[in-house]
Image (tube, rainbow, N blue to C red; front, side):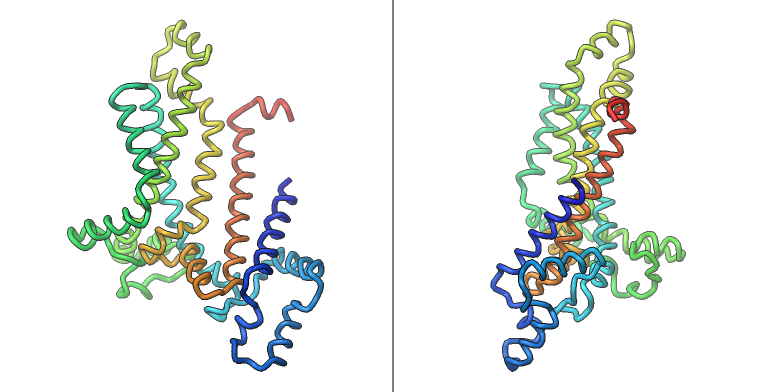
Length: 327
């Protein structure tokens, strides 16, 4: 199923690249290039061959990590993605830690206090997270916390003064600065990260808390909860040791997909905060008709979703012994 899913992803991206009104050869050489130059480039790219042959070459290159050359940067797309993805990874990881770290306890609290003030407060927070446009909230947060109060750093990952003071070993600025002992640069990078990560964390928290509440309400209505209460177990143990443990099985998929959604680039957030990650790279490439970069980024996003789905399936076997018994 994974192989078929990945082939389907490659097929979709391939045919999207062929049906859009952008000639890859013209995008490389320009509109004013002589016809013989355009034809030579088309031959080099294999665009003069049948679609089946083109698709076979496309799959072969994609499996080897060759997504072509970016017209915008003149670098290989794979090289650009390796350069921009660590920024997205750092931002998304902090965002999901905030979202899951707050969303799961809030969802449990809302389920336990169903119909009460706490439940309504959590549901309103979740509704706001679904309703407020990301770009608007990001701009308002920048105006308030950066421009007015000066509590956090502004757009970008780090100030220009620290741009070259941190050796880029992993591409994760916080980790690289800590390993190099550049604590002033670490604090500066953290101040830039706080606002976009909190914004992403809030939106993922809205979804995770809602789903946690739903799963917990289902578990708290089960017979084993009634039996546990009849045995005299404490309410805290019933909730956290039994009900939440069973709710974690479907919740793993929710958290994994939320993380994948953040890793796909968080396009609007990265655009608002000028965060040099995968989302901003794909957006700039799309605006400049750089389809090699757009399709390469799309394949990477799809691969992330497939990989995290596999990871959640593996975690199922750890959290739910019944799945191991069936296999």
